[in-house]
Amino acid sequence: MMLKDALRPRELSVWICAWLLGIIGCSQNFSDQEPAAAMAERGFTARSTSTTPASTTRTSPLEQATDRQALGPLSAVAPKGWVAQQPSSSMRVAQYGLPGPAGEATLGIFFFGPGQGGSVEANIERWRGQFTQGDGQPTQGRRWTRRVGDIEITGLDISGTFSAGMGMGDSDPQADSRMLGAIAVHRSGTVFFKMTGPAQTVEQWVASFDEFLGTLQAGSVEPAY
Image (cartoon, rainbow, N blue to C red; front, side):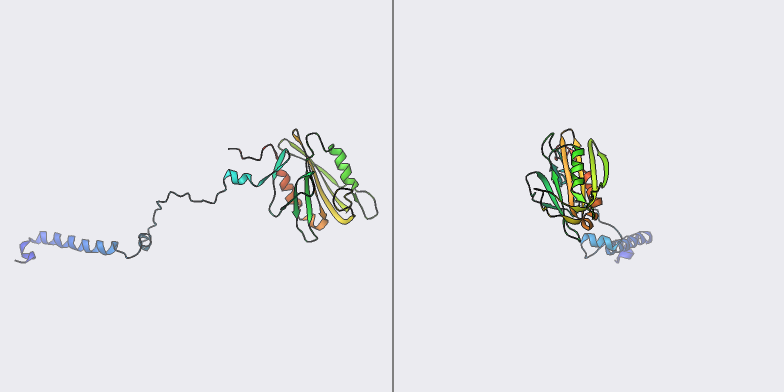
């Protein structure tokens, strides 16, 4: 007896519907692609089961601390483009080379010990005395003050012919020079910053120097957790 004869009309129609749905369902779900690709074919996005964080390149606090340079009782973060150098004298706690179109400028950072190095006024006047104008007259430069946390900073921006003096590097007068100087005073000690070089080169590092001073802080360079 044939199957259609063995089933009543209603049972036969139900059986046929079930058979057709099974064929359609199988044809829709089958794919010879990898699971993620097969889902993409149908507009679905595979949900990741990985436990790896979304980003593995985030800098840890300890890695960030390596960018902070100890400067005697203070520390700071050097801006991009500054080239760390071996200090040219034992009086310098750090030194950077700053490249530029007119030749390299140099930033020397000094710490002589607690209570050492002279007063702010004495150093400002000494720096002014290292510059003269074309007619041989001294120049005053632009003096400024700034506070970063509990650190009081006094600075001097001065241009002209620069004479470093004995024991301070090249003693030959350097025309068309510029200096960005800063004296950072904190209860733990005073740190001196002196950037000198061709005026054209120093000009392109003015904003960078200001940024550098803004990162000053007292105490350890270790990160705070």
